[in-house]
Image (cartoon, rainbow, N blue to C red; front, side, top):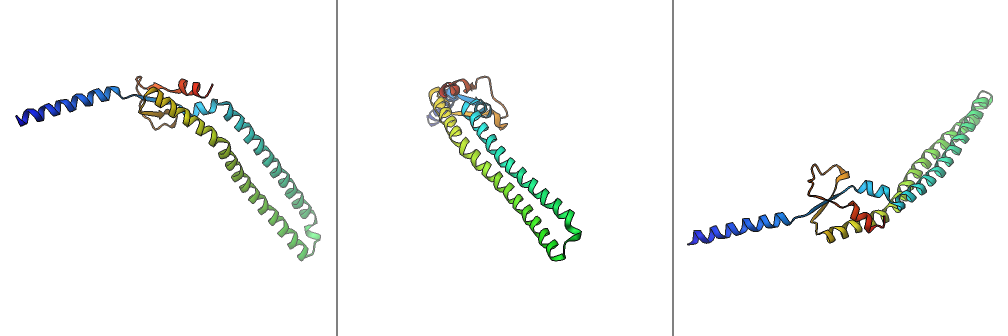
Length: 169
């Protein structure tokens, strides 16, 4: 009798597991592709390019000034007293270091600006993905653009059309 109860529980468990496994729904989406198509992302890219151009123009101006200082130094180097020559060399080295610091700060500034511009976009996309997952009854939505998902079945739902609709695209 105890064996029959145990067998009954085991069969019930297996049947329940099969039913639950059949109800599991998965989805997938290419987040990078979706984000790249968003008008807000395109606008953010243009703003970043504009900012990068300004910083690059400033760096080119500094480079031009450095070249000018260096060429002036080269033409006068042999006629300058040692103290003045050493002072001019130090000025050129200091200016070169300031340029390198500016370049580093410009890169950091661009990275910060990119983060500021992209964070709201990413949050908006994530909310849309979450909403689609809830509406479609999915337990997971995999990002297939990240190359982490090695396989996805044709039974997996492509969530991109739903997310695009949520985002008004």
